[in-house]
Image (cartoon, rainbow, N blue to C red):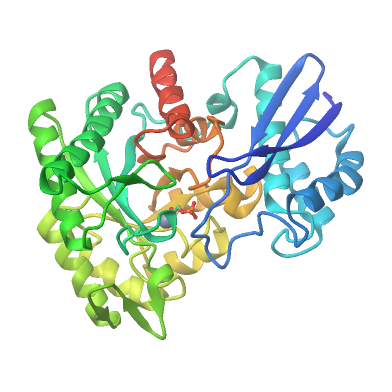
Length: 399
Ligand code: PGA
Ligand code: ZN
């Protein structure tokens, strides 16, 4: 048996400039570290990133109540460890100690185990590795809770589908640049900003944004000679008020929202639509998936929150055909893998994902490979985003 010998936790910054935590694990001559990200448009059913007292309270509780309990445990018994972490927290959403500290330890232990075996994390987690890497799905224009003054729709994404990950990721960044060029030509005197994930933020309507991103995709696709499709993350719960989808220029009821999304899918040949409806609207998701599920991915993020029980409910009804996977939504690697396994059994695609407040940690790149995800949603530019993209370039070389 190889024991967890030493655990450390510290406060660090995320890409938004908010405090978060990273956890270090030592065992024999091996080491693993995971730096936890944080969301801004979080689902109501996610685990809590931090307890009421914030990061400092989380660190204190982790040091007093968690570290002494995990020292000496078998580094390879990931499931037992993750179960114990839930017991030590004692709440049903990790709100006593905080999900970011818990997921930090859970992931750092897996990284240490991989280091002990001398293999990369994607091989250690392993199991579902496909012979192709996930497509990069990058946010190029947006707003919502990730920016001030942007579109109501949170993210306009591009999914580049080249022969290699390297080709795809380069084309994604080029499309991001092309979006800026189009905006500059249309509005030469207006300042252009960037949101939390490196996507452009401009004072354009949702429909105009859709038109611009679709044009950029078409132009770059013609140049590189492989498909580049637009996709959306509406994060609809963030503009759902009193039973209506409230856009700056219009207000839609459920029927209106379903037909609006259907029209966008048809007109712009969307690769994917994420969170197009309110996060409790399972029935509506069933209807929408019946309408557009053959043509594109219908991805549940806030709807499923990487939670196997919520996915089971959705799959039983036929809500969505894909699930976004964010380890810190569910708090442990085991919880994440449970959701992925269930998704595979139910024939749902998985899309591994960053958070809007990220760290430089590249681990989700490995998870995307290990889970056989169809895409990795991790932005198109910015260091904390390219940390994942560049790691996948390295993994592609290795494979
Ligand atoms: P978040 O948003 O990381 O701010 O929660 C990302 C998303 O909605 O996919
Ligand atoms: Zn989302």
